[in-house]
Length: 80
Image (cartoon, rainbow, N blue to C red; front, side):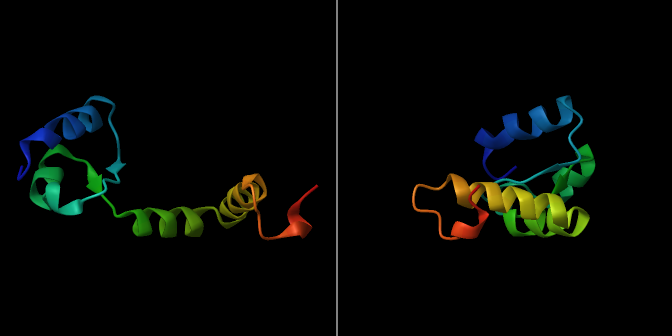
């Protein structure tokens, strides 16, 4: 591991049998290490794309509720 202070993240992922992690910095988690421990690695963009492809209606609802919760939400038609 390039940054030994990130070992706890890998240990936690392995302990809870995570399929993937989505860290802020992919470079701190070499793919070879992650393959060895059986945990996938995704950027935030990749994760959002995957979630959107797997559940477009659910992600649309999450987006809608997030916009509505914003103090200055931008789409009034979603407010109920």
